[in-house]
Length: 240
Length: 219
Ligand SMILES: Nc1ncnc2c1ncn2[C@@H]1O[C@H](COP(=O)(O)OP(=O)(O)O)[C@@H](O)[C@H]1O
Ligand SMILES: [Mg+2]
Image (cartoon, rainbow over the protein chains, first blue to last red):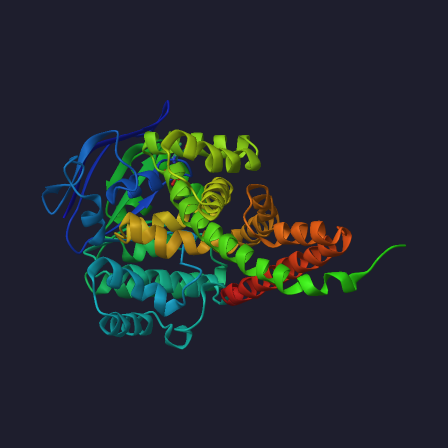
């Protein structure tokens, strides 16, 4: 479903991604783990072209999205993204946040969008906050609305960039639970996270990134019990 | 002390008519300046450099020269160069609208830049086209932040509008001057006009505060 082929990304003189190749199958849940500054966000953002790779190709369903002829907007319609800091639209209510893209991007009628919006907010347990503006919501609630907003476009792939890192500890679980539920529906997910237990439990595959290099690509059990590189070992010692 | 406000009583209707004249060209100028200023602001933030250069040069010229000079050039030079006998009203609207656009564009540009980058990213990630993103996501947030600065610009424009008296447009200021010349008393009509300007600006200020409060709803 997703294939990355020798992706590099250079900011000025700083080579942040140094030739990353991997694949993600349909329905697979992949978590990206690694030290801060290792290029996790940058790689994730290449997948929906928020960053353009300096070289290398990305294919989604066998279509090369890194080709200059590709319409980025079209690609992004089928890839949802959830950010560390939510980025809800502050001047819209929770429901309006979810309804916006289906209406503006897909040309859906207001009524249809409202139906979808209400269903999705129910799915993330936010029915009673439909009319609340984002600043009236807790971090966990904001993130759940943000997930609903991304799902409203009915994406084939969901990208998560540290979705629980900005949350107070007691709100982490509610967001992870929504993500687990999503994984169970067979959604293809790529998740940058520091939640090791979540990764262990939910991921089909772990990518360990260090200094722009993909050092390990294994299933969780092997990664957490028997990492093959020293870098991964020392990283795990620090975080576990 | 030699003060006699009773002398201007016959001139009150004449002076008051100036309110309409002033309001008419001030509101058209504000609207023109606002629309043009928004467009220029978007030019300034696009990645397309010719538009950016155009907007920057435009702003530099209109902010870097006196407004009264711009007014005179439009009023006097247009007929001389083109033979078109431009009216005082049109000259005034052009000068004030074009001038205000330069200031407004800077205010709006700063407002757009101050909107969290994450908003753009979230909109892009959803596949929202640029135009819709600007109109529905970025500009509403930018306007909310810059409303006080915009109100300030509109108030300045309202007061500066008195400059059009120099090209013979019969605004509030000009009418006060005419009344003063007729009765050989300048203080009373000027004072009267001053009060009217103050009332107009105060109403504008209160209206601005009201809109600001309404927009705070989501805070
Ligand atoms: N837009 C950018 N411009 C310049 N440098 C950037 C930009 N985005 C990220 N970087 C740099 O790239 C490196 C990797 O960043 P990032 O992908 O955010 O790492 P991670 O998500 O693993 O913490 C960092 O050194 C960061 O400073
Ligand atoms: Mg990151």
